[in-house]
Length: 305
Image 1 (tube, rainbow, N blue to C red):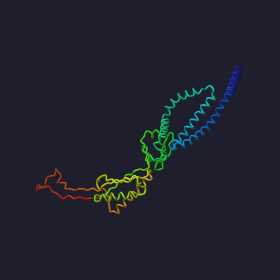
Image 2: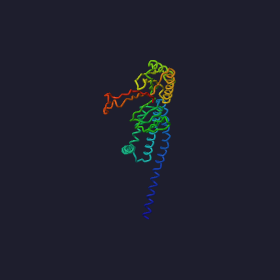
Image 3: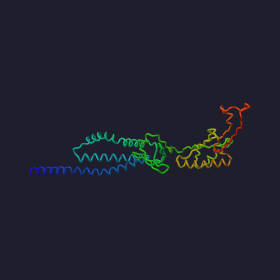
Image 4: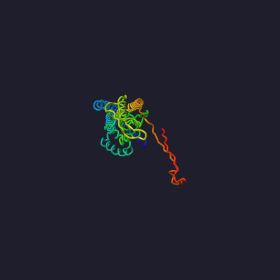
């Protein structure tokens, strides 16, 4: 009977404790339910404010996420304090402070990418839609998250790069400005009038569709090549990769047509080979009977590769 009384008493105490805690638990659940709507409302307000004050879509996304996260943190802390009256807010903060050290070691890569993502969004070295090169990857920035940066390559592939890698690497932003220069090498044979070739190149490149008037194209003579005198045609286009490629194709076609019309050759590489009598130049062969080395006329053979 003593054992039964003990169990009965324990059950009564447990039920009594549950009855006492139930209102607090119910209130905590209601608070969490309301926190969900409060977080959505805070996120909506933050988005509206960000759209009016910030032009970067990535920074707008960051501000909305911060507003939502902060609302959830306050809601959860308030629910914990109400559900467990003996638990003080200072104890929760102290516990979070101690556990953050262990969590920091366990998730240091995640936190590193998170902080790098915040810095990228704040500093804005590039924006969504920019064409960039990061290490061996080149493409258009599709999305900047808290943890990763996603780019779409020109071949239609998605590359997800950790923000810490992006933040610590050299990033080449190819669309950072309104125009971009292309250097096109052109060679003419040595019989060509250089002044005529320069004039033809200047006239031709300025008429190519997609080549900008400002900055103006430039024609530079750069070297005496093995089989040609080398020019570099420097011109400016819009910075997008598609515009650069199309303008370069038109430029090559136009220059070839203009040179053909003016009878200016773009030479192949040429090599000159000399053949000579081996006996005359061989120190180990004896001279001829008359004391003179036999000699055959050298000749050359030009060929095209």
